[in-house]
Length: 121
Image (spheres, rainbow, N blue to C red):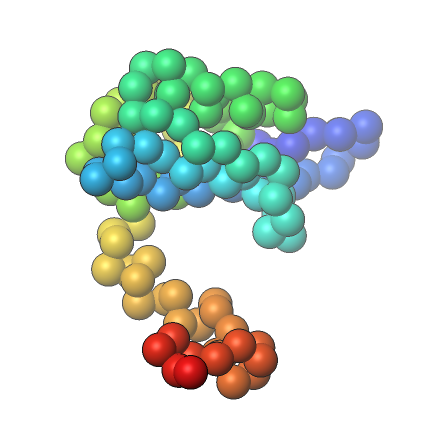
């Protein structure tokens, strides 16, 4: 499991994060390496063509679908069926309320980043 390079003993997990938007019927896809550095980013439509585009992002990385760790915000989605049907075995549903509750931990407070608070003039 993971991205294999020149040395077979080197293991590097690859993570695929999927932010699904019901309102716009699209997916924002982020593929990250073990350190969290971006390998790819793509926005795909919520359609068979869009799902194929997601799968095409993985292939140049030399990864099997079964080697990818996938996180998605909802289980009520045709994309889940697509992923399982195309060999993605490690699909984790992360409830939206968990995602929302962690946003404050991973963003920079306004006064530390030097940007004004929203609504401030």
